[in-house]
Image (cartoon, rainbow, N blue to C red; front, side, top):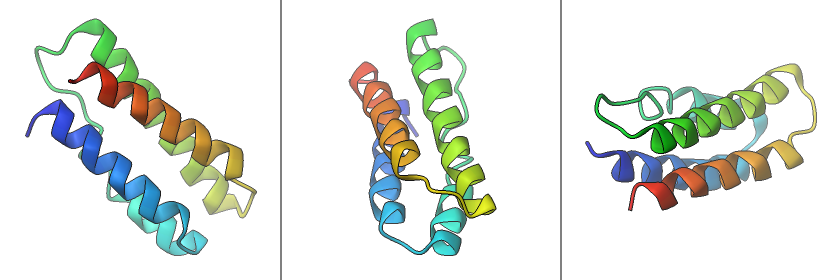
Length: 89
């Protein structure tokens, strides 16, 4: 699966998860781990964007797990994923 396809699937899942209750959203985010893993041969810029998206998604997951507000974290994860998507086109 290409990085572009993975990034698009992650974005779709983030949009869905954002409107779910915390436990469901956390489950959805946990399911994204395989999609945000890097592939060999990606340029440094794409790899950095993918890593940033991964870290931002992890921050959302940590907040949900702890019962903390995650509104700003959702926005950061979506922005990071948009950046990743833009670089894979």
